Structure formats: structure tokens, C-alpha cells
Length: 164
Image (cartoon, rainbow, N blue to C red; front, top):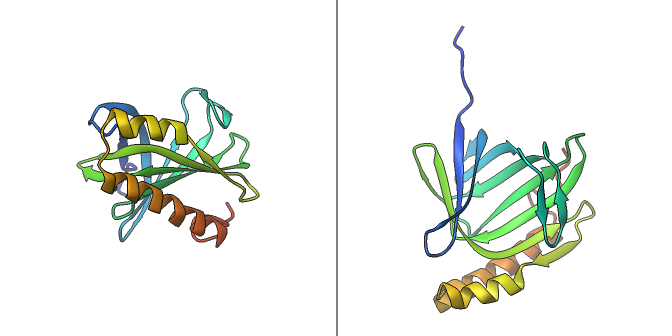
């Protein structure tokens, strides 16, 4: 019998200037065409200024497409209940060896369990457009992607509306 270890990826969220914002580990669940589905677990409590506390041991199913300007995290509580989806507007990720790296453009959406949409961090996006000198093409693409994501949510396209 072959002892197969899960493939572990280091996920790196970077700012537009290339500085590391956050890093964490996930296991690859599935890879299909341009989609990577990974799973991680919060190893510490996170207090998000707009959505509240994400408890330690919350599971995050993470969807990264290498050809899309967003990624989506499905949060599941430690007791197995869906908490919602967190969507990052970002440049498409780059994958090398066992590292998946993306540039977070600081514009986000939180989708609760009833598919109610809350746009997050518009103030941070506006500040960082100036701070990091986002080109007009990046600003326009981020805003266009926000609209595409809202349409995906409203039409319950994968992974929205999919039960656990």
C-alpha cells in the first residue's frame, strides 16, 4: 500500500508592491482545469473589522482560479455550520512548486448564509489605489470583477448556493 501524503500549499497574499500581507498553509482538495480547491483551518482567532470574529478552528475551503481576478473562501464553523463566503478581488494567482501567491487588491465581498451581499473594504481599496499607484487598468478590472462576482452570487453559480 502506498502511503500518500496530502499536497500542502503555502498561500501567500501580497500587496500590490510585492510585500507579503499574510501567509498560511492549506491542503489541496481538488484541481480541475484552472481551479484549485484547497482547505485550511484557522490556527488563531481573527477579528475582522467588518465581519466580526472568525474563531480558531474555523475551516476555510478556498477556491483559486489561475485565470480569474478573484478567489473565494467558504468559511465553516468548528461545529460544521456554513458561516458564509469571503471573496477577494485579486490578480490571478501564480503557482510555483507548492506556493500559491496572489496580489490582493483590497476590495472584498462577504456573502452570508442567505446569500446577502456586503461589499467590504472600499475605503481600503481607495487608499491603496493611491498608496500603491494602481494603474487605471487595474482599478477598472477590480471594479468590473466586483460586478462579475455579484452576478455570480445572485445567480447562485458555483460555489455559491452549493450545500456542504
